[in-house]
Amino acid sequence: MSSLPECTSSSPAVRYGTALISGVLALLLATQVPPVWALKLPLVLFYGVLIITSAWVGGLWPGLLSTVLCIVGAVYWIEPHGTLRVGHPADVVGLVLFLLIGATLSAFGESVARAVRVERASRQVAENAAAAERSAAQVREHTLAMVAHDLRDPLAVIDLNAGLITRASTAGAGVEVSRRAAVVHRTVQRMNRLLRSLLDTALIDSGGLALDLAPESPAALLAEVVETHADEAEAKHIQMRSEAPAGLPPALCDRDRILQVLTNLTVNALKFTPPGGTITLRAGVSGRFVRFSVTDTGPGIDADKLPRIFERYFGERRTQNGGLGLGLFIAKAIVEAHHGIIEVESSVGEGSSFAFTVPLLHQACATDQGLGAGSITTSANHSPAA
Image (cartoon, rainbow, N blue to C red):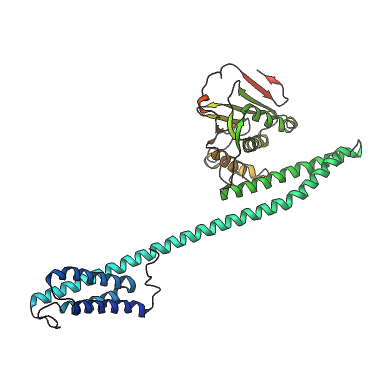
């Protein structure tokens, strides 16, 4: 279809020239082909092709001009042959019908050509928009990567020196220096998290979120998250623990990415759980999947916000606490890349529970056998509990 001529881009000479050429062909056939009845039907059909071609290239009026010229050629087939006279009323009726059919064919040819042009233009617009979107995504990803690269080095230097100051500080005046250095260290960590969120968002938009899948122990993943945030939980007087059934089979997942999801959910829980509250990380088998959950005893989330909680930049209650509103959006993308689902249950005043699934390493092992044999609970102070 891409080779079809464009009426809107053709000059009048081309448009009407096509009609004249069609008419000349009709006249040549009429004068050169013997007037045999067996040839009349294919010749009339050929006239129709010439009329449609003229209308396709030039529009309605060139199509009508071609029709008139074809009628002139058709008159040569009316007895007496080789003249331009009509000798019988029935022939007049036939020529009028030929004219009406030619006008119809001209209108049909023009409408089809117009529809083709509109469809082609719409497809081109869509292709251009898609190309522009891809280009914008590539530029955005490249810009974010450059910004992140340029910021990581000075942040690393700041963090390194904050650690050196902390270790070098002594009693007395050094206590205040140590406190300030700790503030710098926490700020650098927060900036690194923001940079990673921006880069992950760019990867998600460009479809470049790759996974490095391997067998992983769900209980070990939970324990690592609890250990990482144990000091923060203790400072806020929040009890944090992990629970996983004994004999829980391994999951097939990207360890770093699933730790990122668990960390995002745990950091949110730490933000909104009041002192004296509890955060519980759990893992268990759910059909062919391992189901992770992070449950807190915070204020909960309003019911009208729950349907949009995983949208980009939506986290209103989170942005008020210094975030970008990207943590849950990124977590959802990572979970869906693992062919799992993420969901939330929450009641105002009763806390929230975020849960997500990742596939088991061996789906045949996804049964409840052995899950009742006992469980191991790890608290924030690393002491096992029954």
